[in-house]
Image 1: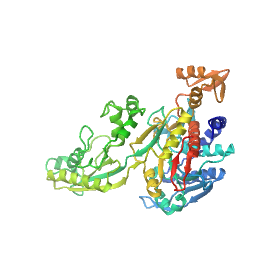
Image 2: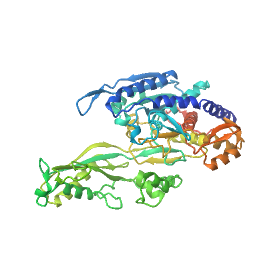
Image 3: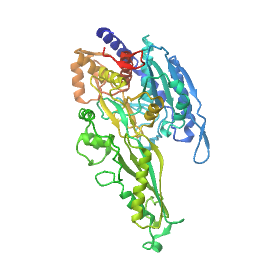
Image 4: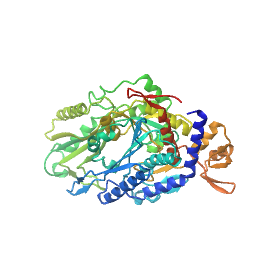
Length: 543
């Protein structure tokens, strides 16, 4: 495809999305209105209804859709609850085209207005260009952005350059119950997939787009200390017994030092050395320490430079203590010696760390510390929950295509980042399919996933940026506003202004629901450059 014809196609696609942005927002509003909270059992019917809505939307695109029944699961109280079905969708079967599988979820975290929301959480509300609502960025907005991208291609009667497969679930916020088994049992559905793309995380900053190539794992531990079968009065027994809480505090205190370094022997032995190529990735990443500090509400970090902060967030293990079960925690004071206490902590492990080895190291360390206390109490250490880290190759053709797509839409290269949290589904798909997996986030760092006032932005600054770089004097959709006028509007930090009698929203940053659809469309377009060779390998070719 020539450069000129490519530009014409880009303009046509941009204009279609600009014209139909209200339709896109209306679709998100309808989805946000569904209280698809997978955590609360009494809302399970809403999750199932949401799955049906998503399936209907894919079917309207012409996709073949299968709602796969997962059966039920048992709650702690013994109640059996149906699991929402998983959507397996397929669109396009051209053997000459590569096949991209998109994963997303349409269930959400719990949300109530009284928890601190400034709007009704299940009513999508626009304030100063931000769309507030539960699921707006996690993950209904991203799922719809992909659907909008495909819908745009079909509306413009453009040939799809790739085949699509969709895996959409409704239990991600509750641990993706049943998903791994389903994928293993339906490997034929994934057998011809070349790439998997997941849009279920955030940028590192509020301004610059990013691609994510890795995440840490997580090993959760319980350390239990017990002295008897009942709580005791501290006035009667304090000072004459070995108290479980005292033992537990000593054990927890032995895990990490004041600088944040884990004190468990051998825990760092398998951590890979930092390569020069990876070190260079960190240098160009946009990361505002003060902004991150402000977002967290803390006064001081353990490290003072961007590089050290990111290294310790992404590629070094960390240990966090989360709480103590069995101790009195209500307001006031209760002078009791608890009979049994359970400390809870986790280790975010990085690639090359073996979970079984980590567990053995933790157990041996805690047993060693405990034995030195000569306590007669009972010690029990367990690892009830764990997930492995995930790491992808940033030089994979999938990442090259995505970089070109983002550069086309946002006018700049994305940050190439890792995620300090755990994303089990990325590792799950990579392990089962043995194919390339990429995290393609669209939410900004301050979008508040899982938090009150979750949002996604909708402004059109990306259009202005693209036109400014091309030297044009008008912004698509706003021909009466010159780039010079946009410059003035942007510098004022206004949320809206009146131009030629028309009330116009002023963009505040480069991330939005429409630009996500644009970026996804150009991600699809970039895959035109992926040519299948007779060996079955994919090669990336610059146009």
